[in-house]
Image (cartoon, rainbow, N blue to C red; front, top):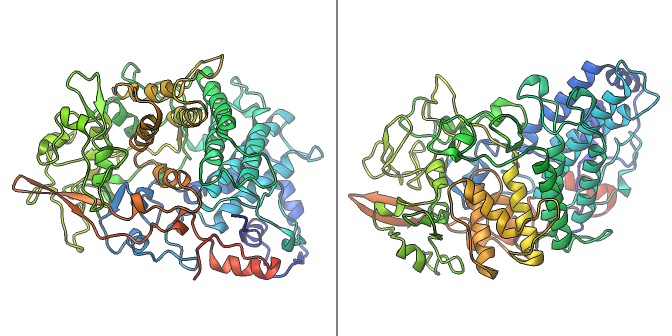
Length: 621
Protein backbone atom coordinates (compact mmCIF):
# COMPACT_ATOMS: atom_id res chain seq x y z
CA UNK A 1 0.00 0.00 0.00
CA UNK A 2 2.85 2.32 -0.85
CA UNK A 3 0.95 4.93 -2.83
CA UNK A 4 0.74 8.60 -2.11
CA UNK A 5 -1.81 11.28 -1.36
CA UNK A 6 -2.54 14.57 -3.02
CA UNK A 7 -2.93 17.21 -0.43
CA UNK A 8 -0.41 19.94 0.00
CA UNK A 9 -1.08 22.46 -2.71
CA UNK A 10 -4.58 23.07 -1.44
CA UNK A 11 -3.58 22.91 2.21
CA UNK A 12 -0.82 25.46 1.79
CA UNK A 13 -3.13 27.67 -0.22
CA UNK A 14 -5.82 27.65 2.39
CA UNK A 15 -3.54 28.58 5.22
CA UNK A 16 -1.42 31.17 3.47
CA UNK A 17 -4.06 32.49 1.04
CA UNK A 18 -1.85 31.76 -1.93
CA UNK A 19 -3.11 30.87 -5.39
CA UNK A 20 -1.43 27.66 -6.53
CA UNK A 21 -0.95 26.16 -9.95
CA UNK A 22 -0.10 22.54 -10.75
CA UNK A 23 3.60 23.16 -11.21
CA UNK A 24 6.59 21.68 -9.43
CA UNK A 25 7.85 25.02 -8.24
CA UNK A 26 5.37 27.58 -6.93
CA UNK A 27 6.26 31.23 -7.15
CA UNK A 28 5.44 33.23 -4.04
CA UNK A 29 3.69 36.55 -4.62
CA UNK A 30 5.09 39.58 -2.89
CA UNK A 31 3.06 40.36 0.22
CA UNK A 32 3.41 40.76 3.97
CA UNK A 33 2.13 37.33 5.02
CA UNK A 34 5.31 36.44 6.99
CA UNK A 35 5.13 39.60 9.06
CA UNK A 36 1.37 39.09 9.52
CA UNK A 37 1.79 35.54 10.80
CA UNK A 38 4.57 36.61 13.15
CA UNK A 39 2.25 39.28 14.46
CA UNK A 40 -0.52 36.72 15.01
CA UNK A 41 1.72 34.42 17.03
CA UNK A 42 3.19 37.30 19.01
CA UNK A 43 -0.06 37.85 20.91
CA UNK A 44 -1.58 35.44 23.43
CA UNK A 45 -5.22 35.95 22.43
CA UNK A 46 -4.43 35.74 18.74
CA UNK A 47 -2.69 32.40 19.22
CA UNK A 48 -5.76 31.12 21.04
CA UNK A 49 -7.99 32.32 18.22
CA UNK A 50 -5.74 30.81 15.58
CA UNK A 51 -5.74 27.48 17.39
CA UNK A 52 -9.53 27.53 17.78
CA UNK A 53 -10.07 28.43 14.12
CA UNK A 54 -7.43 26.27 12.52
CA UNK A 55 -7.02 23.27 14.81
CA UNK A 56 -10.17 22.89 16.87
CA UNK A 57 -12.77 24.92 15.01
CA UNK A 58 -12.95 22.68 11.94
CA UNK A 59 -12.27 19.51 13.92
CA UNK A 60 -15.95 18.63 14.06
CA UNK A 61 -16.18 18.75 10.28
CA UNK A 62 -12.75 17.32 9.67
CA UNK A 63 -12.73 14.42 12.08
CA UNK A 64 -16.39 13.63 11.93
CA UNK A 65 -18.61 13.12 14.92
CA UNK A 66 -22.30 12.30 14.99
CA UNK A 67 -24.29 13.13 11.86
CA UNK A 68 -21.44 14.42 9.71
CA UNK A 69 -21.17 11.50 7.28
CA UNK A 70 -23.29 12.74 4.44
CA UNK A 71 -25.85 13.85 7.03
CA UNK A 72 -25.82 10.42 8.64
CA UNK A 73 -23.94 8.55 11.35
CA UNK A 74 -20.92 6.43 10.48
CA UNK A 75 -22.88 3.43 11.80
CA UNK A 76 -25.02 3.54 8.64
CA UNK A 77 -21.96 2.71 6.55
CA UNK A 78 -21.31 -0.64 8.23
CA UNK A 79 -23.39 -3.43 9.77
CA UNK A 80 -24.46 -1.40 12.81
CA UNK A 81 -27.31 0.40 11.07
CA UNK A 82 -29.43 0.73 7.95
CA UNK A 83 -30.46 4.22 6.95
CA UNK A 84 -34.18 4.84 6.59
CA UNK A 85 -33.98 7.42 3.81
CA UNK A 86 -33.40 5.92 0.36
CA UNK A 87 -32.46 9.39 -0.91
CA UNK A 88 -29.71 9.79 1.67
CA UNK A 89 -25.99 9.32 1.01
CA UNK A 90 -25.73 5.95 2.80
CA UNK A 91 -27.99 4.41 0.16
CA UNK A 92 -25.58 5.52 -2.55
CA UNK A 93 -22.85 3.84 -0.49
CA UNK A 94 -24.96 0.65 -0.37
CA UNK A 95 -25.36 0.81 -4.14
CA UNK A 96 -21.61 0.94 -4.65
CA UNK A 97 -21.53 4.48 -6.00
CA UNK A 98 -18.52 5.57 -3.93
CA UNK A 99 -15.79 6.65 -6.35
CA UNK A 100 -12.63 8.78 -6.42
CA UNK A 101 -14.59 11.44 -8.26
CA UNK A 102 -17.67 11.10 -6.07
CA UNK A 103 -16.81 10.78 -2.39
CA UNK A 104 -19.99 9.84 -0.55
CA UNK A 105 -18.61 9.09 2.88
CA UNK A 106 -15.76 11.14 4.22
CA UNK A 107 -17.18 12.41 7.53
CA UNK A 108 -16.53 16.01 6.62
CA UNK A 109 -12.83 15.18 6.36
CA UNK A 110 -11.46 15.50 2.86
CA UNK A 111 -7.87 16.24 1.88
CA UNK A 112 -8.52 19.95 1.85
CA UNK A 113 -9.73 20.05 5.46
CA UNK A 114 -7.34 17.53 6.91
CA UNK A 115 -4.11 18.92 5.52
CA UNK A 116 -5.26 22.47 6.13
CA UNK A 117 -5.57 21.63 9.83
CA UNK A 118 -2.24 19.80 9.83
CA UNK A 119 -0.66 22.83 8.21
CA UNK A 120 -2.21 25.07 10.86
CA UNK A 121 -0.53 22.94 13.51
CA UNK A 122 2.83 22.99 11.75
CA UNK A 123 2.68 26.74 11.25
CA UNK A 124 1.83 27.22 14.91
CA UNK A 125 4.79 25.05 15.92
CA UNK A 126 7.10 26.97 13.62
CA UNK A 127 6.31 30.24 15.35
CA UNK A 128 5.78 29.33 19.01
CA UNK A 129 9.01 27.28 19.10
CA UNK A 130 11.01 30.12 17.52
CA UNK A 131 13.07 31.56 20.37
CA UNK A 132 13.53 34.76 18.41
CA UNK A 133 9.80 35.45 18.23
CA UNK A 134 8.91 38.53 20.25
CA UNK A 135 5.62 37.91 22.04
CA UNK A 136 3.50 39.10 24.96
CA UNK A 137 3.54 35.72 26.76
CA UNK A 138 6.40 33.94 28.47
CA UNK A 139 8.34 30.76 27.69
CA UNK A 140 6.15 28.49 29.84
CA UNK A 141 3.00 29.54 28.01
CA UNK A 142 4.82 29.19 24.71
CA UNK A 143 5.68 25.54 25.43
CA UNK A 144 2.07 24.93 26.51
CA UNK A 145 0.89 26.24 23.14
CA UNK A 146 3.40 23.96 21.42
CA UNK A 147 2.05 20.94 23.29
CA UNK A 148 -1.45 21.64 21.97
CA UNK A 149 -0.21 21.93 18.40
CA UNK A 150 1.72 18.65 18.69
CA UNK A 151 -1.30 16.76 19.99
CA UNK A 152 -3.76 18.14 17.46
CA UNK A 153 -1.35 17.30 14.64
CA UNK A 154 -1.15 13.72 15.91
CA UNK A 155 -4.95 13.65 16.23
CA UNK A 156 -5.49 14.57 12.59
CA UNK A 157 -2.85 12.14 11.39
CA UNK A 158 -4.52 9.34 13.35
CA UNK A 159 -7.90 10.00 11.79
CA UNK A 160 -6.33 10.29 8.36
CA UNK A 161 -4.50 6.96 8.44
CA UNK A 162 -7.62 5.22 9.75
CA UNK A 163 -9.38 6.17 6.53
CA UNK A 164 -6.72 6.26 3.83
CA UNK A 165 -3.65 4.50 5.19
CA UNK A 166 -0.17 5.98 5.29
CA UNK A 167 0.17 9.71 4.61
CA UNK A 168 3.07 11.96 3.64
CA UNK A 169 4.77 13.10 6.82
CA UNK A 170 4.65 16.87 7.24
CA UNK A 171 6.68 18.12 10.16
CA UNK A 172 6.72 21.77 9.11
CA UNK A 173 4.75 24.10 6.83
CA UNK A 174 5.85 23.80 3.24
CA UNK A 175 7.35 26.89 1.61
CA UNK A 176 5.73 28.19 -1.53
CA UNK A 177 8.77 27.02 -3.48
CA UNK A 178 8.45 23.42 -2.26
CA UNK A 179 9.10 20.79 -4.94
CA UNK A 180 6.15 18.41 -4.61
CA UNK A 181 7.63 15.97 -7.11
CA UNK A 182 9.90 14.63 -4.38
CA UNK A 183 7.11 13.87 -1.90
CA UNK A 184 6.24 10.30 -1.05
CA UNK A 185 3.70 8.52 1.04
CA UNK A 186 5.11 7.08 4.25
CA UNK A 187 4.24 3.58 5.38
CA UNK A 188 1.51 3.16 7.97
CA UNK A 189 4.10 2.30 10.63
CA UNK A 190 6.18 5.38 9.76
CA UNK A 191 3.08 7.52 10.24
CA UNK A 192 2.45 5.89 13.61
CA UNK A 193 6.07 6.61 14.55
CA UNK A 194 5.44 10.25 13.69
CA UNK A 195 2.16 10.33 15.62
CA UNK A 196 3.78 8.85 18.72
CA UNK A 197 6.77 11.19 18.43
CA UNK A 198 4.42 14.18 18.19
CA UNK A 199 2.58 13.05 21.32
CA UNK A 200 5.88 12.49 23.14
CA UNK A 201 6.98 16.01 22.20
CA UNK A 202 3.84 17.27 23.92
CA UNK A 203 4.21 15.02 26.96
CA UNK A 204 7.64 16.40 27.85
CA UNK A 205 5.79 19.60 28.75
CA UNK A 206 5.10 19.34 32.46
CA UNK A 207 1.55 19.76 33.77
CA UNK A 208 0.83 22.82 35.86
CA UNK A 209 -2.55 22.39 37.52
CA UNK A 210 -2.16 25.68 39.37
CA UNK A 211 -1.93 27.59 36.09
CA UNK A 212 -3.19 25.59 33.12
CA UNK A 213 -1.84 28.10 30.61
CA UNK A 214 1.71 27.18 31.63
CA UNK A 215 1.57 23.42 31.20
CA UNK A 216 -0.17 20.46 29.63
CA UNK A 217 -2.96 19.45 31.99
CA UNK A 218 -4.17 15.94 32.71
CA UNK A 219 -7.70 17.30 32.52
CA UNK A 220 -9.14 20.21 30.60
CA UNK A 221 -10.52 22.73 33.05
CA UNK A 222 -14.05 22.77 31.69
CA UNK A 223 -16.40 22.26 28.78
CA UNK A 224 -16.73 25.75 27.37
CA UNK A 225 -15.68 27.97 24.52
CA UNK A 226 -12.91 29.31 26.74
CA UNK A 227 -11.38 25.83 26.83
CA UNK A 228 -12.22 24.78 23.27
CA UNK A 229 -8.64 25.08 22.04
CA UNK A 230 -7.23 22.82 24.75
CA UNK A 231 -6.57 19.11 24.93
CA UNK A 232 -5.05 17.03 27.70
CA UNK A 233 -2.13 14.74 28.45
CA UNK A 234 -4.66 11.90 28.55
CA UNK A 235 -5.54 12.56 24.91
CA UNK A 236 -1.88 12.30 23.89
CA UNK A 237 -1.66 8.89 25.58
CA UNK A 238 -4.95 7.77 24.03
CA UNK A 239 -3.75 8.72 20.55
CA UNK A 240 -0.59 6.67 21.10
CA UNK A 241 -2.66 3.71 22.25
CA UNK A 242 -4.99 3.65 19.25
CA UNK A 243 -2.23 4.31 16.73
CA UNK A 244 -0.10 1.43 18.04
CA UNK A 245 -3.07 -0.95 18.10
CA UNK A 246 -3.99 -0.14 14.50
CA UNK A 247 -0.37 -0.53 13.36
CA UNK A 248 -0.25 -4.06 14.83
CA UNK A 249 -3.61 -5.05 13.32
CA UNK A 250 -3.74 -7.43 10.31
CA UNK A 251 -4.56 -4.76 7.71
CA UNK A 252 -1.50 -2.69 8.54
CA UNK A 253 1.08 -4.82 10.33
CA UNK A 254 3.11 -5.50 7.18
CA UNK A 255 3.01 -1.90 5.95
CA UNK A 256 6.18 -0.94 7.80
CA UNK A 257 8.77 -0.20 5.12
CA UNK A 258 11.34 2.22 6.45
CA UNK A 259 10.84 1.54 10.14
CA UNK A 260 10.33 -1.07 12.83
CA UNK A 261 7.21 -3.26 12.64
CA UNK A 262 4.56 -2.83 15.31
CA UNK A 263 4.22 -6.30 16.76
CA UNK A 264 1.46 -7.21 19.20
CA UNK A 265 4.07 -7.21 21.96
CA UNK A 266 5.15 -3.69 21.09
CA UNK A 267 1.55 -2.52 20.87
CA UNK A 268 0.71 -4.15 24.21
CA UNK A 269 3.54 -2.25 25.89
CA UNK A 270 2.42 1.10 24.48
CA UNK A 271 -1.24 0.46 25.24
CA UNK A 272 -0.49 -0.62 28.81
CA UNK A 273 1.62 2.46 29.48
CA UNK A 274 -1.15 4.67 28.13
CA UNK A 275 -3.79 3.00 30.29
CA UNK A 276 -1.61 3.09 33.41
CA UNK A 277 -0.74 6.75 32.91
CA UNK A 278 -4.42 7.72 32.81
CA UNK A 279 -5.41 5.50 35.74
CA UNK A 280 -2.61 6.83 37.91
CA UNK A 281 -3.79 10.37 37.25
CA UNK A 282 -7.40 9.90 38.27
CA UNK A 283 -9.20 8.64 35.19
CA UNK A 284 -11.62 5.78 35.84
CA UNK A 285 -14.57 3.97 34.33
CA UNK A 286 -17.91 5.37 35.43
CA UNK A 287 -20.04 2.92 37.41
CA UNK A 288 -23.16 2.80 39.54
CA UNK A 289 -21.25 3.76 42.67
CA UNK A 290 -20.22 7.11 41.17
CA UNK A 291 -22.38 10.16 41.75
CA UNK A 292 -23.51 10.65 38.17
CA UNK A 293 -26.60 12.43 36.80
CA UNK A 294 -29.41 9.85 36.67
CA UNK A 295 -31.09 10.72 33.38
CA UNK A 296 -31.07 7.35 31.62
CA UNK A 297 -32.43 3.86 32.00
CA UNK A 298 -29.14 2.81 33.62
CA UNK A 299 -25.66 4.19 34.32
CA UNK A 300 -24.38 3.43 30.82
CA UNK A 301 -27.28 5.38 29.32
CA UNK A 302 -26.83 8.28 31.73
CA UNK A 303 -23.18 8.61 30.78
CA UNK A 304 -24.04 9.41 27.17
CA UNK A 305 -26.93 11.68 28.07
CA UNK A 306 -24.81 13.93 30.27
CA UNK A 307 -22.39 16.68 29.36
CA UNK A 308 -18.77 15.50 29.48
CA UNK A 309 -16.53 16.96 32.17
CA UNK A 310 -13.21 15.48 31.03
CA UNK A 311 -11.99 13.43 33.96
CA UNK A 312 -13.60 15.60 36.61
CA UNK A 313 -16.48 15.15 39.02
CA UNK A 314 -18.64 12.15 38.23
CA UNK A 315 -17.26 11.85 34.70
CA UNK A 316 -13.71 10.56 35.00
CA UNK A 317 -13.94 8.51 31.83
CA UNK A 318 -14.21 11.10 29.06
CA UNK A 319 -10.84 12.00 27.58
CA UNK A 320 -11.80 14.15 24.62
CA UNK A 321 -14.68 15.61 22.66
CA UNK A 322 -14.15 18.65 20.43
CA UNK A 323 -16.04 21.64 21.78
CA UNK A 324 -18.68 22.23 19.15
CA UNK A 325 -22.20 21.60 20.37
CA UNK A 326 -23.62 21.40 16.86
CA UNK A 327 -21.60 18.24 16.33
CA UNK A 328 -20.63 16.85 19.73
CA UNK A 329 -24.16 17.23 21.12
CA UNK A 330 -26.23 14.70 19.24
CA UNK A 331 -29.40 15.34 17.30
CA UNK A 332 -30.79 11.85 17.50
CA UNK A 333 -34.30 13.18 18.12
CA UNK A 334 -34.31 14.82 14.68
CA UNK A 335 -31.98 12.76 12.51
CA UNK A 336 -32.46 9.25 13.93
CA UNK A 337 -35.43 9.75 16.19
CA UNK A 338 -38.85 8.37 16.93
CA UNK A 339 -41.64 9.37 14.53
CA UNK A 340 -43.92 10.35 17.44
CA UNK A 341 -41.55 13.11 18.58
CA UNK A 342 -42.14 16.69 17.46
CA UNK A 343 -39.69 17.81 14.78
CA UNK A 344 -38.28 14.39 13.87
CA UNK A 345 -37.27 14.35 10.20
CA UNK A 346 -36.26 10.73 9.68
CA UNK A 347 -35.53 7.49 11.51
CA UNK A 348 -32.04 7.75 10.07
CA UNK A 349 -29.54 5.20 11.35
CA UNK A 350 -31.77 2.30 12.37
CA UNK A 351 -29.98 -0.41 14.38
CA UNK A 352 -29.77 -3.67 12.48
CA UNK A 353 -30.86 -7.07 13.72
CA UNK A 354 -27.20 -8.05 13.54
CA UNK A 355 -26.33 -5.42 16.13
CA UNK A 356 -29.23 -6.54 18.33
CA UNK A 357 -27.92 -10.12 18.03
CA UNK A 358 -24.59 -8.96 19.47
CA UNK A 359 -26.03 -8.17 22.92
CA UNK A 360 -25.63 -11.19 25.15
CA UNK A 361 -28.29 -13.04 27.14
CA UNK A 362 -27.82 -12.90 30.92
CA UNK A 363 -28.90 -15.50 33.45
CA UNK A 364 -31.65 -14.64 35.92
CA UNK A 365 -29.14 -14.40 38.77
CA UNK A 366 -26.79 -12.25 36.68
CA UNK A 367 -23.83 -14.55 37.29
CA UNK A 368 -23.42 -15.84 33.75
CA UNK A 369 -24.11 -14.79 30.19
CA UNK A 370 -23.90 -16.17 26.69
CA UNK A 371 -23.69 -14.79 23.16
CA UNK A 372 -26.96 -15.04 21.28
CA UNK A 373 -25.18 -16.53 18.27
CA UNK A 374 -22.55 -19.15 17.71
CA UNK A 375 -19.74 -16.66 17.19
CA UNK A 376 -17.68 -19.11 15.12
CA UNK A 377 -20.49 -19.39 12.60
CA UNK A 378 -23.10 -16.72 13.42
CA UNK A 379 -25.20 -17.05 10.25
CA UNK A 380 -25.61 -19.79 7.67
CA UNK A 381 -25.36 -19.35 3.90
CA UNK A 382 -28.89 -17.93 3.74
CA UNK A 383 -28.14 -15.60 6.69
CA UNK A 384 -30.31 -17.56 9.07
CA UNK A 385 -28.97 -17.10 12.61
CA UNK A 386 -27.21 -19.96 14.36
CA UNK A 387 -28.51 -19.47 17.89
CA UNK A 388 -26.02 -20.67 20.49
CA UNK A 389 -26.88 -23.61 22.75
CA UNK A 390 -26.08 -21.55 25.82
CA UNK A 391 -28.39 -18.71 24.75
CA UNK A 392 -31.26 -21.16 24.31
CA UNK A 393 -30.52 -22.61 27.74
CA UNK A 394 -30.90 -19.10 29.19
CA UNK A 395 -34.32 -18.71 27.57
CA UNK A 396 -33.54 -16.84 24.37
CA UNK A 397 -36.26 -17.19 21.72
CA UNK A 398 -36.43 -14.90 18.71
CA UNK A 399 -39.95 -15.98 17.82
CA UNK A 400 -41.47 -13.94 20.65
CA UNK A 401 -40.91 -10.88 22.78
CA UNK A 402 -38.85 -13.10 25.07
CA UNK A 403 -35.94 -12.33 22.74
CA UNK A 404 -35.65 -8.93 24.43
CA UNK A 405 -35.67 -10.23 27.99
CA UNK A 406 -32.59 -10.65 30.18
CA UNK A 407 -30.22 -8.97 27.74
CA UNK A 408 -27.01 -7.04 28.36
CA UNK A 409 -27.95 -3.74 30.14
CA UNK A 410 -26.26 -1.84 27.33
CA UNK A 411 -28.96 -3.13 24.97
CA UNK A 412 -31.66 -1.32 26.93
CA UNK A 413 -29.54 1.84 27.00
CA UNK A 414 -28.82 1.83 23.28
CA UNK A 415 -31.82 0.57 21.31
CA UNK A 416 -35.57 1.19 21.21
CA UNK A 417 -37.35 -2.09 20.48
CA UNK A 418 -40.96 -3.21 20.35
CA UNK A 419 -42.59 -2.98 23.76
CA UNK A 420 -39.88 -1.00 25.51
CA UNK A 421 -40.71 1.98 27.67
CA UNK A 422 -39.17 5.40 27.12
CA UNK A 423 -38.09 7.54 30.07
CA UNK A 424 -41.26 9.61 29.78
CA UNK A 425 -43.30 6.45 30.31
CA UNK A 426 -44.52 6.02 26.75
CA UNK A 427 -44.36 2.49 25.39
CA UNK A 428 -42.67 2.25 22.01
CA UNK A 429 -44.40 -0.15 19.64
CA UNK A 430 -42.50 -0.88 16.43
CA UNK A 431 -44.88 -3.66 15.37
CA UNK A 432 -47.23 -3.25 12.43
CA UNK A 433 -49.85 -0.65 13.39
CA UNK A 434 -47.86 0.57 16.41
CA UNK A 435 -47.12 4.17 17.35
CA UNK A 436 -43.58 3.79 15.90
CA UNK A 437 -44.35 1.05 13.40
CA UNK A 438 -41.76 -0.31 11.02
CA UNK A 439 -42.10 0.40 7.33
CA UNK A 440 -41.14 -1.42 4.16
CA UNK A 441 -41.95 1.62 2.05
CA UNK A 442 -39.09 3.59 0.55
CA UNK A 443 -41.07 6.82 0.98
CA UNK A 444 -41.66 6.49 4.74
CA UNK A 445 -38.29 7.75 5.92
CA UNK A 446 -39.64 8.78 9.35
CA UNK A 447 -40.23 5.17 10.41
CA UNK A 448 -37.73 2.43 11.12
CA UNK A 449 -36.78 0.03 8.35
CA UNK A 450 -35.25 -2.51 10.75
CA UNK A 451 -37.78 -2.65 13.59
CA UNK A 452 -35.45 -0.65 15.88
CA UNK A 453 -34.56 2.95 16.69
CA UNK A 454 -31.44 4.46 18.20
CA UNK A 455 -31.75 5.12 21.93
CA UNK A 456 -28.13 5.81 22.79
CA UNK A 457 -27.57 9.58 23.15
CA UNK A 458 -31.34 10.20 22.87
CA UNK A 459 -33.32 11.99 25.56
CA UNK A 460 -37.09 11.51 25.05
CA UNK A 461 -37.69 15.08 26.19
CA UNK A 462 -35.87 16.35 23.09
CA UNK A 463 -37.90 17.82 20.25
CA UNK A 464 -38.08 20.81 17.94
CA UNK A 465 -38.43 23.11 20.93
CA UNK A 466 -35.47 21.84 22.96
CA UNK A 467 -32.56 19.54 22.24
CA UNK A 468 -31.69 17.70 25.44
CA UNK A 469 -29.88 14.84 23.73
CA UNK A 470 -26.55 13.54 24.92
CA UNK A 471 -22.98 14.08 23.83
CA UNK A 472 -20.60 12.16 21.64
CA UNK A 473 -17.30 11.25 23.21
CA UNK A 474 -14.49 11.07 20.70
CA UNK A 475 -12.16 9.29 23.13
CA UNK A 476 -12.92 7.65 26.49
CA UNK A 477 -11.04 5.48 28.93
CA UNK A 478 -12.89 2.25 28.05
CA UNK A 479 -11.09 2.30 24.70
CA UNK A 480 -7.71 2.23 26.43
CA UNK A 481 -8.78 -0.85 28.40
CA UNK A 482 -9.86 -2.61 25.22
CA UNK A 483 -6.82 -1.54 23.20
CA UNK A 484 -4.57 -3.06 25.84
CA UNK A 485 -6.73 -6.20 26.08
CA UNK A 486 -6.58 -6.80 22.33
CA UNK A 487 -2.85 -6.30 22.01
CA UNK A 488 -2.06 -8.29 25.16
CA UNK A 489 -4.28 -11.21 24.15
CA UNK A 490 -2.73 -11.45 20.70
CA UNK A 491 0.76 -11.24 22.18
CA UNK A 492 0.46 -13.40 25.29
CA UNK A 493 -3.04 -14.88 25.61
CA UNK A 494 -5.84 -13.83 27.99
CA UNK A 495 -4.19 -14.43 31.36
CA UNK A 496 -0.58 -13.24 31.27
CA UNK A 497 -0.08 -10.50 33.85
CA UNK A 498 1.41 -7.38 32.29
CA UNK A 499 3.01 -4.49 34.19
CA UNK A 500 4.33 -3.83 37.68
CA UNK A 501 2.59 -0.56 38.52
CA UNK A 502 -0.91 -1.80 37.80
CA UNK A 503 -0.69 -5.53 36.96
CA UNK A 504 -3.41 -6.53 34.51
CA UNK A 505 -4.33 -9.29 32.09
CA UNK A 506 -6.24 -9.05 28.83
CA UNK A 507 -9.13 -10.85 30.49
CA UNK A 508 -9.04 -8.50 33.47
CA UNK A 509 -9.20 -5.44 31.21
CA UNK A 510 -12.23 -6.72 29.28
CA UNK A 511 -14.03 -7.84 32.41
CA UNK A 512 -13.45 -4.49 34.12
CA UNK A 513 -15.40 -2.72 31.39
CA UNK A 514 -18.13 -5.38 31.41
CA UNK A 515 -18.46 -5.23 35.18
CA UNK A 516 -19.26 -1.53 35.30
CA UNK A 517 -22.31 -2.24 33.11
CA UNK A 518 -23.38 -5.15 35.29
CA UNK A 519 -22.13 -7.91 32.99
CA UNK A 520 -20.44 -11.06 34.32
CA UNK A 521 -16.86 -11.74 33.31
CA UNK A 522 -15.76 -13.70 30.24
CA UNK A 523 -14.24 -17.07 31.16
CA UNK A 524 -13.51 -18.38 27.66
CA UNK A 525 -10.01 -19.12 26.39
CA UNK A 526 -8.27 -19.20 23.02
CA UNK A 527 -10.34 -18.47 19.93
CA UNK A 528 -13.53 -18.26 22.01
CA UNK A 529 -12.02 -15.43 24.06
CA UNK A 530 -11.02 -13.58 20.89
CA UNK A 531 -14.53 -13.90 19.42
CA UNK A 532 -16.11 -12.73 22.67
CA UNK A 533 -13.70 -9.78 22.78
CA UNK A 534 -14.61 -8.64 19.27
CA UNK A 535 -18.29 -8.95 20.05
CA UNK A 536 -17.79 -7.10 23.33
CA UNK A 537 -16.01 -4.22 21.60
CA UNK A 538 -18.91 -4.02 19.14
CA UNK A 539 -21.44 -3.71 21.97
CA UNK A 540 -19.52 -1.30 24.20
CA UNK A 541 -18.78 1.15 21.38
CA UNK A 542 -22.01 0.85 19.36
CA UNK A 543 -22.61 4.03 17.35
CA UNK A 544 -19.33 5.55 18.56
CA UNK A 545 -17.48 5.27 15.23
CA UNK A 546 -15.30 2.28 16.09
CA UNK A 547 -17.04 -0.60 14.31
CA UNK A 548 -16.47 0.78 10.80
CA UNK A 549 -12.71 0.87 11.35
CA UNK A 550 -12.46 -2.28 13.47
CA UNK A 551 -13.96 -4.39 10.68
CA UNK A 552 -11.34 -3.05 8.30
CA UNK A 553 -8.25 -3.29 10.46
CA UNK A 554 -9.16 -6.87 11.50
CA UNK A 555 -9.09 -7.81 7.79
CA UNK A 556 -5.98 -8.67 5.86
CA UNK A 557 -5.11 -6.58 2.79
CA UNK A 558 -6.39 -9.27 0.39
CA UNK A 559 -9.70 -9.84 2.21
CA UNK A 560 -13.11 -8.16 2.02
CA UNK A 561 -16.13 -7.32 4.16
CA UNK A 562 -18.58 -9.83 2.70
CA UNK A 563 -19.23 -11.58 6.03
CA UNK A 564 -20.46 -8.39 7.71
CA UNK A 565 -21.34 -5.64 5.25
CA UNK A 566 -23.01 -7.42 2.35
CA UNK A 567 -26.26 -8.39 4.06
CA UNK A 568 -28.08 -6.94 7.07
CA UNK A 569 -31.55 -7.73 8.33
CA UNK A 570 -34.60 -6.41 10.15
CA UNK A 571 -37.13 -7.75 12.64
CA UNK A 572 -40.73 -7.27 11.53
CA UNK A 573 -43.58 -7.97 13.95
CA UNK A 574 -47.15 -8.44 12.74
CA UNK A 575 -49.92 -9.78 14.98
CA UNK A 576 -47.40 -11.31 17.33
CA UNK A 577 -45.42 -13.05 14.59
CA UNK A 578 -41.70 -12.21 14.67
CA UNK A 579 -39.99 -12.44 11.27
CA UNK A 580 -36.38 -11.78 10.36
CA UNK A 581 -36.21 -10.14 6.95
CA UNK A 582 -33.16 -9.56 4.78
CA UNK A 583 -32.78 -6.04 3.46
CA UNK A 584 -31.59 -5.27 -0.06
CA UNK A 585 -28.09 -6.62 -0.57
CA UNK A 586 -25.37 -4.00 -0.35
CA UNK A 587 -22.63 -3.45 -2.90
CA UNK A 588 -20.00 -1.97 -0.60
CA UNK A 589 -18.13 -4.99 0.73
CA UNK A 590 -15.40 -5.59 -1.86
CA UNK A 591 -11.70 -5.52 -1.07
CA UNK A 592 -11.33 -1.90 -2.14
CA UNK A 593 -13.69 -0.82 0.66
CA UNK A 594 -11.03 -1.59 3.24
CA UNK A 595 -9.74 1.91 2.43
CA UNK A 596 -11.47 5.04 1.21
CA UNK A 597 -10.64 6.43 -2.23
CA UNK A 598 -8.53 9.51 -2.72
CA UNK A 599 -10.14 12.38 -4.60
CA UNK A 600 -9.45 11.82 -8.29
CA UNK A 601 -8.62 15.45 -9.08
CA UNK A 602 -5.90 15.34 -6.46
CA UNK A 603 -4.61 12.01 -7.75
CA UNK A 604 -4.28 13.41 -11.26
CA UNK A 605 -2.46 16.50 -10.01
CA UNK A 606 0.10 14.44 -8.15
CA UNK A 607 0.44 12.00 -11.02
CA UNK A 608 1.57 14.93 -13.16
CA UNK A 609 3.94 16.12 -10.44
CA UNK A 610 5.48 12.84 -9.35
CA UNK A 611 4.78 10.35 -12.12
CA UNK A 612 3.25 8.00 -9.51
CA UNK A 613 -0.33 6.86 -9.13
CA UNK A 614 -1.22 7.58 -5.53
CA UNK A 615 -4.72 6.10 -5.59
CA UNK A 616 -5.67 3.42 -3.08
CA UNK A 617 -6.02 -0.16 -4.43
CA UNK A 618 -9.11 -0.91 -6.51
CA UNK A 619 -10.41 2.64 -6.87
CA UNK A 620 -10.77 3.92 -10.41
CA UNK A 621 -13.33 6.26 -11.92
